Amino acid sequence: MRGRGSDRVRRAVGSVASADVRVWTVVVVVVFSILFWAAGRHASVIVDGVRYHFLDDDQMISMRYARNLAEGHGLVWNPGGDRVEGYTNFGWTLVMAVVHAFGASDATTSLWVRGLNWLLAAWVLVLTARLLVALGLDRGPPARAVLLTLALSYDLLFWAINGFETTLLTVLFLWGVVRALDDAARGALSAPTCLLAGLLPIVRSDAADLTLAVLVVAVGLGARRRWWLVALAIVPLALHVAFRLNYYGDLLPNAYYLKVAGRPGLLWAGLGNLKGFVATYTVAVVLVGAAIVVDSDRRVRVLAGLIGFGFARVIVVGPDMFPGFRFLAPYLPIVLVAAAATVTRLAPSGRASVVLTTLLMAATVFNAGVNGRTRFQDLVSPNGGPAVNTVAGVLVNRHTGQNARMAVTAAGCVSYFGRREAIDVLGKADHHVARLPAVAGAPTGHNRFDIHWSLRDRPDLVVTFGPHLLAAEADVILKAVQSNPERDYGAALVLNPTFVREYRDHPVPVRYLLDRNALFVHERSPEIARLGGWREPSVQR
Image (cartoon, rainbow, N blue to C red; front, side, top):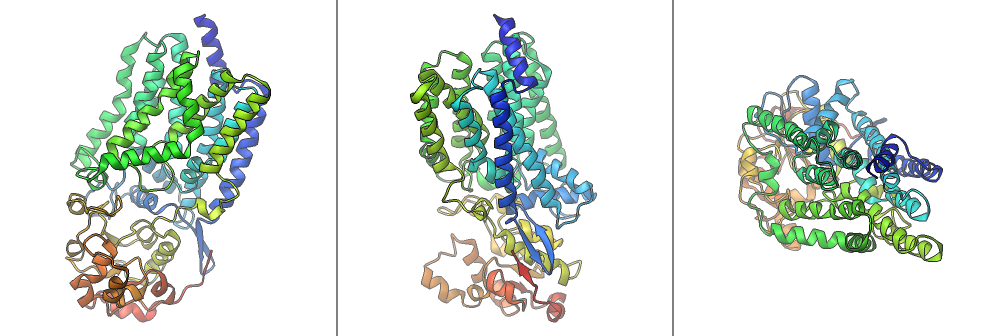
C-alpha cells in the first residue's frame, strides 16, 4: 500500500501526469501571463522619454536596501548611516540584490524583479497542478476550475505584479507541501523538505506558520522515520537571527516594533481580517470545512486544516494594511484544491459536479479575482503614490546636490529613485520612531511618527506627499476636513512649527510636484540656490 502511494506522489513531483491537467496548466499560465503583463505595464511612468518601472512603495524600500548591498554599502537604508532592519523580507531582499548585481539601471530593475515574480507565479500554477495529481484530482471540471480560478486570483496577480515576496513564499510553501506528501508516503522525512520549510521565515520573517504547516503535513501523514531532520528546518532561522543580532544589534526586525508591538486592538483587527477572508472566499471556505469533517482521504483533511495556521498567524501579528490577504495568500492554492476535493467527493461526475464546480469558481472569481469590474490599473498598488513619487525621485536625483538630505513620508519610490540620504518619517528605517507609542485610530505602519524628531537636523528637503495647497493653507484645509494632527502624519507635518517657519515658504517650483507631491527646501539649505535650475518634466503613463 505504502509503495503504491509513494509511486503515485513521486510521479506527481516529477511531472504533471494526465493530459487533461497538462493542457490546462499551459492554458492557465498563458491566461495569467496576459493579465500579468497587461496590468504590469501600468506600474511604470515615462519621464522625459524614459520609462521608469516601479513596484509597490514598500517593496521599493526593500529595493533600496538591495541596491545598497549590491553596490557594496551593506544592507542599510542610508550608506554610512545607522544600521536599521527596515524590511521584513530578508530572503526576497537578497534576491533583489542579485538582480541589482547584474547591472540593470534604476529605471529597469523593478521590471526585472517583476519578471522574476512572473516566473514564480507560473511555478505556483504548476505546483498546484502537481498537488492535484498527488491527490488524484487531476481530471475533470474541478481541477480545471482550481487552476483557472487561481490564474484569475487577485491574491496571486496583485502580489506578483507589485513585487511582493508573497509569490516566492507561495512557491517554497507549495513545493514543501508536495515534498512532504512524498515523504509521508515513504514514511521518512527528507533533508530537502526540512530545508525548504526552514527557508520560509527567511523569505519573510513572520512566516513560521508556513514552516510548521509543511512539517505537520510530513510528520502527521506518516513521515516518522528520520524525524530528527526536523532540526534542519531550524538552521536557516538560527543563522538569520545570529546575523540580525550581529549586524543590526536586535533580535527582531524594526517593523515588528513599528507594526506589532504595543499596537492597540491587534486581536480585533486580526479577527476582522479573518472575517473579510471568509466573506471573500465563502464558497471555498465552506467546502474546505466540509473536507475537514467528511473527506475520506486523510491527506485532504490534513491539507484543508492548514488554513488554521494562517488564521493563527493573522491573529498573532495582526492583518496587513494592503487590500487582499497577503498573509493568507500562500494557503490559497491549497484551499482551492481542498475545495475541489470536496466537490469531487460529493459529485464525482454529471450535472451536480458541473453545478458545484461553477459555483466555486464563479463565487471566488467574482469576489476575489479578475472579472468584468476589474481594470488593469486596479492590480497596481496605489500604496505611497508610486508613480508620483517615482517622478519626484527622478527630479530629486537630477536637480539636487549629492550631499542633499530629505525627509520622506512615502519612503520607497522617492528614496530609491532620488538616491539621496533619506529620513523615514514613518519609521520603517528609524529605531526611535518605530518604538514610539502607537497612535490610536491610525492605519498600521502610519501610526507612529515624531515630526520634531524627523526634522531635528533640518534636512535640505521635505517631501510632503501632498499638493502645495495643503501645506500653504494647512490650517484652513484641516479645519474644513476636521483632520486631527495628533493622529494624521500628513497634518502633523504641515502644521509642525519647524516646517511652517523654515520650509513652507520655499517650495520646489515645479507644477507637476506642486499639484501632486510638493517638495519644500529648508531656508538655509544650499539647495535654495539650485531652485532656479529645476525644470518641468514631461510625464506620461
